[in-house]
Picture (cartoon, rainbow, N blue to C red):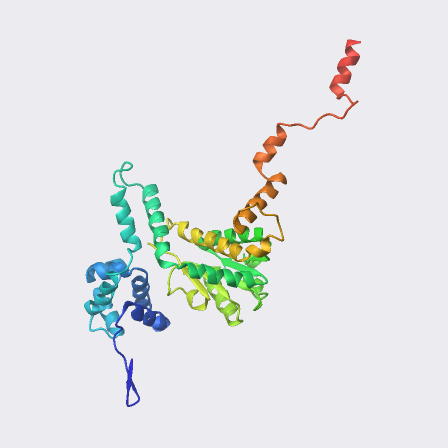
Length: 344
C-alpha cells in the first residue's frame, strides 16, 4: 500500500497471506454475495488454485462474473490474476480436505464393496484429522492452556451442532477440580448467565457455520468486558475468530447434516489435556499419582478409580448383584421359620 500526495493507492496483494488478511479485514463491509465468495475462498484455497472459473462459480452458487468482480474488488485485473496467488501457495502448501479425501479413496479403493455413506463419512473424518496436524500448531494449545489455567472460572458456550462439544468440555474439565460452567440457556437465560463473567474468568466458545446468533452476541459482549476467549470454530471469517485470544480452526467440508464432529472433538480433547498438563504441578495436591505417570493422565486414572469405587458404573453394580449381602447371624428368614413349624 502506497501513499502519494495524500491519496491512498491500493495495490493487489502479492502473497496468499496478504490476500487472506485483506479479505478478513474487509469482510464485514462486503455485500452478501461477496461474503459467500470470500468464505469459500478462505476455506478452500486449493480448489481456487486448481478449478476453472465456471466450476468455482457453480460450487459457490454465483455467476462467473461475480468472481471476476470480486477479484477486481481486491485490486486484481481479473479472476485469473487472483488465482495465480493461490497457485503460488499451492507449490508449498499441504493438501486440502478435498484432496485428502480423494487420496484416501484411491489408497483404500480395494477395501469394501463400493461407496457408502458410512465409508464416505469415515474417509472425511480421517482426512480432517490429518489436516489438523498441518493447520494447528502446538503453541496454540500451550497459549490456550495458559489462559484456562489462570482463569478463576471457565465458562463454556455452544449451541446447535456445537452443543455436544461444549457439553463434553464441561464434563472433562470438571474432573480437574476447576470451576467450570456451561452456558446452556436454560429458561432462555443465556445472556443473564454470561453477564456473571468477569475479567478474571475465561470463556470457551464453540460455533460453526451457520453461527448461532445468541452465541455470537454473547461472545462479542464478553470480549468487550476484557474476558479472554478461546474459540473452536471453522474459519478465519467466523464471527468468533476476531474476538478470540486463541482460535482453533477445524477443517470444514460441505455444510450439511452429515458433517462430522470428529475434528472438533479431537481439538476439544487436546485442549483438556493441555490444560491438565499446565496444571500438572497443582494436581498432585488433590489426588495421589501413580509413579512415573504423566500428571494429567494420572489425574484421569485416579478420577476413574474413584468413580468406580463409588459404585456409579453399571459393571460395578452387576458385580455387587452377584454377591448378595450375607444374612445376619441368628436370624432365619420367614419362609424357613414356616417350614420348620410345618415339619414339626
